[in-house]
Amino acid sequence: MADVLLKVTDLSIVFGGLKAVSGFSCELSMGELVGLIGPNGAGKTTVFNMLSGVYTPTSGEIDYWDRKGRVHKVGTKGPASLNQIGIARTFQNIRLFGNMTVEGNARIALHSRRVETPLDVLFRLKRFRIDEERMKLEAEEILSLFKIDNKKYELARNLPYGEQRKLEIARALASNPVLLLLDEPAAGMNGQETEDLMKLIAFIRKEFRLSILLIEHDMRLVMGICERIMVLDYGRIIASGTPEEIQKDPAVIKAYLGEDAV
Ligand SMILES: Nc1ncnc2c1ncn2[C@@H]1O[C@H](COP(=O)(O)OP(=O)(O)OP(=O)(O)O)[C@@H](O)[C@H]1O
Ligand SMILES: [Mg+2]
Image (cartoon, rainbow, N blue to C red; front, side, top):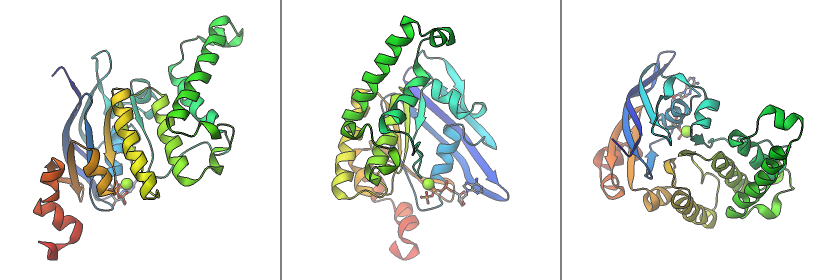
């Protein structure tokens, strides 16, 4: 299983009496871009919350292989330690430090991968200064990739919505992930912005050799860039396959359009 990055087995979570996700299993290989779609309330974000350590699964296993090929049990770790080993995410409801600058937001994420010790920081040793300089350059680079470097001194909350979404992805990327989880990155974007974002996601996947799991309601975006798609409905996977297979799957059409559609 050399190139398997993530193996999820029979994952379930119950809230009160509600089984929000039930028997979810999947495998993700290095470099894959896989879509996770389904109607509102299907359990997509809940899957992400379990993969990123926000929720502890009620049952099931999540195995993740880091850069060095070491296996980790995701279900027992919190978001910060998962971020350290290469799992980063964006949120459906944007979460930025609104009163901080654009650059500040990017630099915070870079902190999770700095090399200096607390003593270096305390005495402002050379290693600290080199690190500060390197982080500044890296933050610039990532922001320019997303074409928001010209806004680096603006407060994050003053950016238009589409750019806030981009900054969120930039920030996730700055933590140097192996697995990137994107929860509706195109939500609230117009057609042109969505188109640009689609190209950008494909580009960063290649450039940063990432594996990406993408939740998205915009079918054009999902069908356009994903190699493989999983469809959730009422917490269960009802279909999984190539975009072509998914588009003509009767169970998928029924889930989206109701009984009358098939
Ligand atoms: N913390 C929670 N407590 C109770 N119920 C929850 C919690 N989180 C999610 N749920 C419920 O779990 C179900 C799945 O929600 P989830 O947010 O995962 O759906 P989704 O597929 O992401 O939907 P959308 O497309 O609207 O974002 C919903 O019925 C939701 O109300
Ligand atoms: Mg959601």
